[in-house]
Length: 325
Image (cartoon, rainbow, N blue to C red; front, top):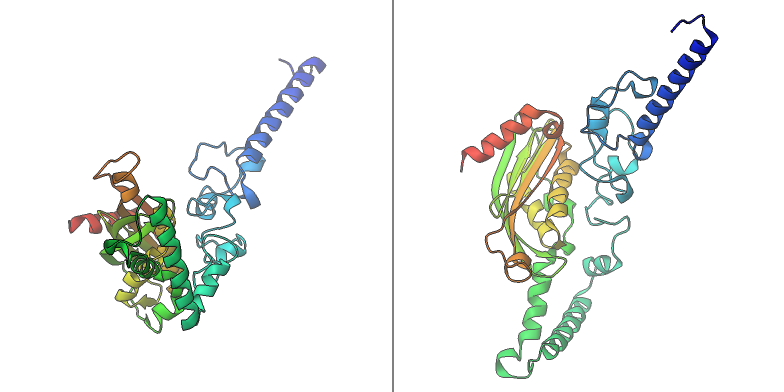
């Protein structure tokens, strides 16, 4: 085709215009909310168009821990570019109480700040509700074996959900220390028990934690959680990692959210270079009812900072966790 030919020039111009439109459409479709890459793990996007000349690492850093933009919750990924208020304050309030909604539950505030008289009234109200449940399933709540069951269950349920009455600041207290340690810190095999918010039956597991003096990770494997972090001039008292896992597990939960909450709480406390959390748990709602599959294990993980962006750091963490088993 000769460029001197007007018809040829027209066809070439039309072809270039069509190519530009295709590239523009591809670029816009790959953008999420606030310009974030909606497919951060896809590195096959053409990079020769003017609309796609961005470093491949930028979307990967900004896309967040699997949170979808519509959730209103972002995860800090240590980027120099602003990613919104939610990213700089991953926990909706300073005590980590407002998860997962924007506004903390009114009922939780009432329980947190209740007087002794209000606590007694709440327990009495719960016991009355349990008595109604016993009647509805066909039992006699006045027979000897069940006479005190409503009161016992009310006390037990309040104990199993006592995490609603605890604040991160009170748990951590002053157990944050300056330390020039820049290698990974791991606490593993932290056993936890929680209540599934869908069926109010238990699920149990362990947490393995690793902290990269700026990155932090938590693992729950075989009924355990492992937490790891890489410090950034600050370290956390080792028992506090277990306490953080405990306070969030003592609430109505789903395993995915619990894993993220532990990681974000460590990040909020000492701002390490990275945090990693892996959790492995058994859910009674899968073994006692429904599909009835005893032995089924659910594994979830949450990686922040260097654990997410650096493959070698992640591999070292997993190797150290598996090596002791």
